[in-house]
Length: 425
Ligand SMILES: *[C@@H]1O[C@H](CO)[C@@H](O)[C@H](O)[C@H]1NC(C)=O
Ligand SMILES: *[C@@H]1O[C@H](CO)[C@@H](O)[C@H](O)[C@H]1NC(C)=O
Ligand SMILES: *[C@@H]1O[C@H](CO)[C@@H](O)[C@H](O)[C@H]1NC(C)=O
Ligand SMILES: *[C@@H]1O[C@H](CO)[C@@H](O)[C@H](O)[C@H]1NC(C)=O
Ligand SMILES: *[C@@H]1O[C@H](CO)[C@@H](O)[C@H](O)[C@H]1NC(C)=O
Ligand SMILES: *[C@@H]1O[C@H](CO)[C@@H](O)[C@H](O)[C@H]1NC(C)=O
Ligand SMILES: *[C@@H]1O[C@H](CO)[C@@H](O)[C@H](O)[C@H]1NC(C)=O
Picture (tube, rainbow, N blue to C red):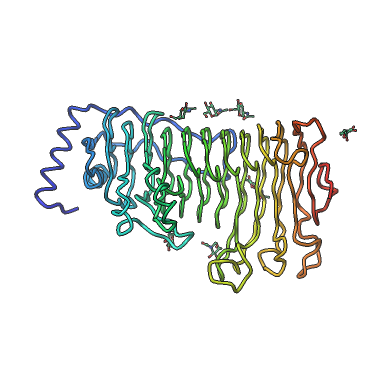
């Protein structure tokens, strides 16, 4: 790296601060468990140098000093945000060059809520017009907060602005683009203007011990071998959502409150694109006051031909397991729609291979006694003349309705012999 003289002086300043602020606590040892995706690889330990780059507290724009610290401490150091220090980031940060580096976030990081400064700076993607304040990419990166660190998007200002202008750009609070063999742990996330976490183009990432308050949880996209576990998410849209090309993902021991549940889809939104969601294991999660528990929506957003981003894509969903889910006051425990009313879509002719197993708890009064639905487009595929939803299995679903009636399910075009459910239609 070549730095101008002023930057070098600042780097020296950073090191001086480091001497005063002391050393960050060590990164926690995080492992997936009890389930692990096949072939999952943890960040490699043992390569860490002692270099520490402490970022000085800065409520104007900490962006430039964070970027400098990341360059300075790349290849073996720790970028350190000490406990008690506060930061405001007002410039977008491209952190996709990382290698063997830790981020110890013990302080509080805000993103400026001066809404107008962001559209010209954020990293924007065509997929659902996602935009990022900062993006992390590279390998062997450990980002940790030990339950103390806070990242706050000050979303309220955006949500208020949205009431009068729905087009206001609402960046995602935390994003990865090409992050590999890495961990993200112990961070409190608050008030994202848009989604909370966009995990894209990433492999072998474990996310654990997080505490998220207000809006969406995690969205995975073009990623595989991801573990999301041991975290608390309150008042969210989707608690976890598997977007196109999410494969080999384990989600376990989450406590989700107030969301649409843990969802697959929608798929086939973009004409000409192939969307795959495969090998997903959703294990031992607790869902409270959610509209749905396990939700799968395998159908394009709209009919083909009505525009390049409103349907017409292809792809498939395969091998999705929801096991051990506890519900409290949920409207539905399972919700599956497979191309209902749009059976001409090629994405609709694949066979989902889906298991709902061991779900229990007490439902809300909203649809009592109906506890969910499984709706398939048609009994047979036009292409192969075999059962479209033949591999959808439900068993050990023991939920209680507040009225005391037996829970019922709406089952349409399903192979009922595989559903140990009280199907009423
Ligand atoms: C992922 O990688 C592709 C291919 O390199 C790139 O075009 C895209 O911008 C990356 N990020 C996302 C979110 O798709
Ligand atoms: C998560 O954060 C919220 C808001 O700060 C707090 O009330 C709650 O106790 C935290 N939950 C856990 C399990 O740490
Ligand atoms: C589940 O996650 C919580 C944090 O939400 C953690 O305290 C607990 O130890 C985890 N349980 C298991 C079995 O890992
Ligand atoms: C998903 O993966 C398939 C197969 O590798 C690829 O053809 C397709 O372009 C990918 N789709 C997206 C949205 O990345
Ligand atoms: C289904 O997905 C799970 C979770 O990723 C994986 O462990 C299992 O091997 C997959 N099954 C098949 C038949 O591929
Ligand atoms: C499931 O999660 C609960 C709540 O964190 C935990 O107490 C329990 O040990 C977990 N069970 C299994 C089998 O992982
Ligand atoms: C509820 O289900 C149980 C077991 O399947 C059955 O014995 C009972 O008659 C049902 N009760 C009502 C009210 O349908």
